[in-house]
Amino acid sequence: MKTLRGIAVSPGIAIGEAIIKQKKKISIENKYIENSDKDSEIERFNHAVMAETSELERFIENYTKTKEDKELLNTHKAILLDPLLSERIIAQIDKENFTVENALYNFLLEITNIFDKMSNDYLAERIADYEDVIIKLIDRLTGKKDKLFEEEFLKNQDKSYILVMDNISPSDVTKSYHSNVRGICLQKGSKTSHSAIIARALGLPVIVGISALFQNITDNTPLIIDGNKGIVIVDSDRQTLSNYLSQYRKEEEIRQELEDIVNLPCLTKDGKKISLMANIELEQEIDVVLSNNADGVGLFRTEFLFVNRDNQPTEEEQFQLYSTLAKKLGEKQLIIRTFDLGGDKISNLVHTPKEHNPYLGCRGIRLSLQYPDMFKRQVRAILRAGFYGNVAMMFPMISSVDDFIAAQEIVSQCKNELKINKIPYNNEIKIGIMIEVPSAVLCAEELAKRCDFFSIGTNDLVQYTLAADRNSEIVSKYYDSYHPAIFKLIAMTVNIAHRFGKNVSVCGELASEYDFICLLIALEVDSLSVNPNSLLAVKKAIMNCNFAETKKIIRKIFKLNRAEEVRELINSFSK
Image (cartoon, rainbow, N blue to C red):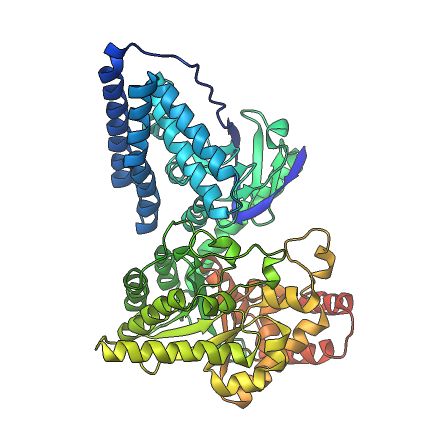
């Protein structure tokens, strides 16, 4: 038995046999055609494009369920029908006497070389899209079309599979979901890729960034994916398999039990009401929010609108999405966070200098203020959506009162513009801020006078308070949520906000960690906002919490000075 570690990008447990799909090493031999064969070669190319387009359209029509899935797969269709692709291939056939396979291969090498010289996550994902499309065309032309995702294969297999690949395209994630694939392990990939976003939305466990993947796994190897911990267990022993099967069945039972509390009020044992909301980033997640009877969306991440594309989203495009969500939620609140990105993520959309440490650089509200036109388009879209529902606006990465005043000024300008143009908007929209850095806590009094609510992003608050990159294994021991400083900062934030009559939500990972749920309530936060799939489990934990009893624990924590002491105290309380 071996345990491989990677990055968990889509949670859940999956058990099945490995089915390996290594990235193809395409090598097309240079062959040349006679002048008399040019027309037929161009016809072969056109026929392949039309056939591939037709198959893609059929898949989109029959298998994609969401608007986002369709849009992502339509990017592949756009590549297929891109005039540049057609012109380049036909020109090489006509002028160089290349075969169509040779022309496609040369085009792939050319764009790969161009993209490889660019350090940009978006472009890295785009090259994967291009590779996917061109390889499919070459396979079709050479008669080597991949059988893995052929519909007949997907329908007729009885086994459960774990797909093992170098990387995966969005279209193949969608196809996997409709097949017998129960989970995916990748050597490459990222948490923000198209593929990862789709997998999370579909509930398909995925782990990426697993080194030496192919050296440790062969076809039909029994695998267990633990998408919660980011580990893959290869050829597990009987006891481990038994444990995971038990865990899987237990999770299924818990899921069934949680269904019983969907319509119950979210109260602690001693009757304290807690607002429970959801963090989402895709439109289709709103259905999970509604079906679980959450109080609304406490954090709508808008970054998805800005990454993985080659143009900035228009105001109208954003308005349509925000207003659709607002209408679906009805009276329930929708808190839209303006884009929380660093320049490294959208350097293809705006010119940004390279930074040595993007986490401490121009990101969040800082980037928004640096590009006011782009920011204003989003603010106007949110203001307009506010006319159609219970919408609030929230700014990320506020580190000073000046930042908030500058952002507030942009909002005022946008209101004036909408008013002049007689476009309906919500003039009384609530505006809140993320509390993610210690300076925001220390300035909370002045900020509370100016904004309408706080939302504590605990992931970043821990990171910036303890000066420990949460993605670094080297300093991982310093990233400790049990540090007494974290409890004191949250308590300070809540106390100041309440003094000014403002609500405080927690939307970071601590809000869904069992040990912390009751403690956050004891710290008197008003609302928790969590992943949609965690809503009912968090609700159950709240219902098992005794507010008055947990307050006693908090008082003890405030007297401690070391994280280990806090951890021991909480553990003893949990027992």
